[in-house]
Image (cartoon, rainbow, N blue to C red):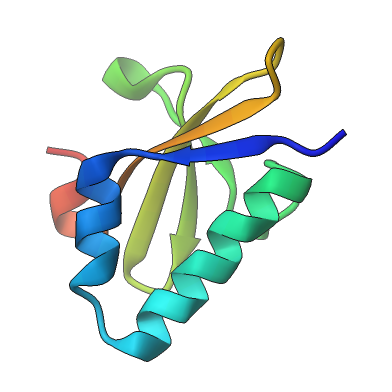
Length: 87
């Protein structure tokens, strides 16, 4: 069964502000999360204050998300450039 993907408002707003090519690339990656949350290259579990989250690296951008495995939901909480996303 596929996962349902929920994108937080701040992540969606950031996505809207991007140029079309970048936006489509990130949207495709997010769509892949519904099929397999760990299947994309560059997926790594986070540590420290971000424990429980996973990140995907797409160029200089990062997508931070966490899973509700019981309800099969992927929550995309943050999207942004590497330098800003972890603050």
